[in-house]
Image 1 (cartoon, rainbow, N blue to C red):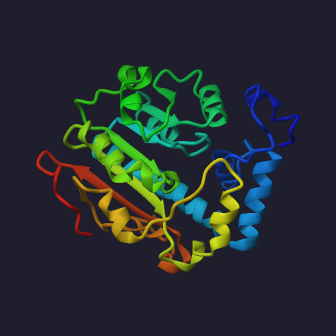
Image 2 (cartoon, rainbow, N blue to C red):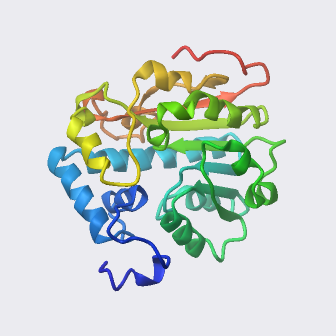
Length: 280
């Protein structure tokens, strides 16, 4: 897509020269909602580590599998934190293919991602987007779309896919996710992926350095810190693993951990699990 072709979906006043994480991710997934500045950063990332695009695609594939897992458990409402641009294969498409009445609320703080999300969802009465900072859970949970579309007294599928690593340590990330957890009914499920330097694929410091040219920095975390984000949830099999190895599709080749850059897991919120620490 050229700059001219993209003019109808870029909000007025957006600095086209500043790369956007949401649009970089869209480009890595083969999407068309990105600008020259985004493509330049994506190409620098793939020059440093050619596996970056594969990591992005495995992450999206995990999202689809996690949503289907939640649907199989009877969940029909979803809250997607740090959703980016909900292009092909995102939560509402997967969920509503199973149940057209499934409800989805996307949350992102970036104006371009939110504007394009609203354009995509304009004719979808069961999906909406909130522009909010996910580190302020009260703003999200008290927003109009959450109050209108989601019933927090019933199980919710909470998704934090490839967003936690954009939250700096001073945001108190465990507290942020614990606040969302405590707002969820028993039977709710929480799916998360998170960048790590535990494996070689994204350990090159030039990856983080390149991301500093965007409006978001990345903060990879080790396994113990990612595992702690599941406190109050019982991890389902296979526990905390990598995105390519979490309940992969049949006939899909296993991905060696050193070739993956994301931890992934899904946990269930039980009535008595608030203060339990996950063990896997």
